Image (cartoon, rainbow, N blue to C red; front, side, top):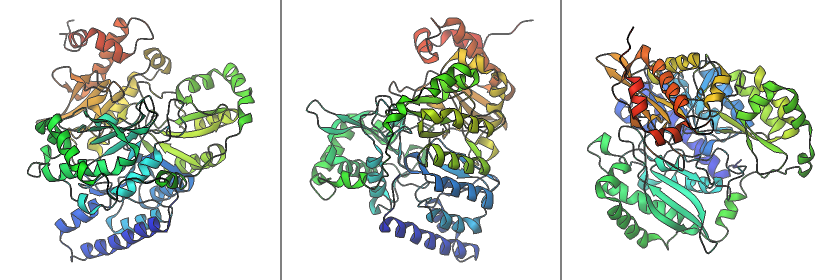
Length: 554
């Protein structure tokens, strides 16, 4: 866990004081709505359909137990007793009173949290692999690089009013779990043939109305040049990005319209002017940043435990959960535990205050007091001794947080949709429940195997539908809710955009359409080991389309 220094704490405390004054002046009629809008957005405050929505930053998805307890306190005291974890590793509250938001921010500051730059046309929350630091396939821990970037980006005077929002993600593992190629800048930490650390840089990715897989702009950037290269990319974007059309203002449009070669030349020319300046990292800079993170002492004797294997053999329910909700830890004797926020009857990503408090207690007891937020709207306890996993599972089961569906069909991503969002065209949460109801048998889900279903209530794509193996997009047709379907998307190493199946489906027909897609897959896969994505890429759209749009006869 990154620990604030006095500079960090002073910064967030002063921001709370500033926003308290701004809010009081707005409520007193002394600050025009248009001026206050820009100020509230920089503090994560939106106006939704029924109430304000407050988005709180969770940098690179990492929470201490005291911070999760504070999130529970906020849900209980200022909201309707729950919060919603998002695909950007943040948390949102849908019902705060405007007058009390400064009090929420003050409570957050007391545990080294904030809502700074979680909205607005600025550099947003820096995200990363939710298994950073513990994954078996990881080269090194990317979180110190994320924190370095967060500090550079916070209140950056030159990039405080960009043409549009800007998102940066890091990965240092063989498998991309941070969706780096659908970010404005995606960073893969690599080691070149000479053994030097550096980065492969992607730019111009993004979802929303015009989804684009980000192209590579630099194959290898030396480790010391991270911030200066970011600065060069942002300068080119800030100077040339469109400000006359909100739908064409993202950097992905600039890269596409400029052409990759020309964009790369512009960035390199800008970088040449600044790369040897004050942003160049010096020897010890990253070590100093790493020293601000807590270090855990693992017990080498933990690998001698045999009770874990015995429990797997004795308890079939535990074994089924372990198969889906555990991941390999780099340290022998430890397990990575996924906490599923995808139970039937609950909006995906929602968590009650009681559950937050309980998971904070479990983190203290079993996982060094840390919790991670995933891009799939779940949580992770990353450092659990395998001898304690069975006890932890029992506790999670009692809390309704042990659904054994991580990576399966009901582990779907879902934005709040029309239930809350003023931008949405259609509901998402109720459709998610329809899908849960159709596939309520977990044995059937295990037979189907890993699959990523992602759903958005509008073209903004907060549910990442464009890169779902199955993507669902809510659209409005003359005041009625309809849903488009795409197949074959991916946000991982093999990143791709989904292909649209054809005409959209009416509200009552969308869940049955997903059932038809699954039925086609099960009938066509080569074996139980062939994934949905592999099957679709092999057989193409035709058999799915034929089944979806076949004329039903009596």
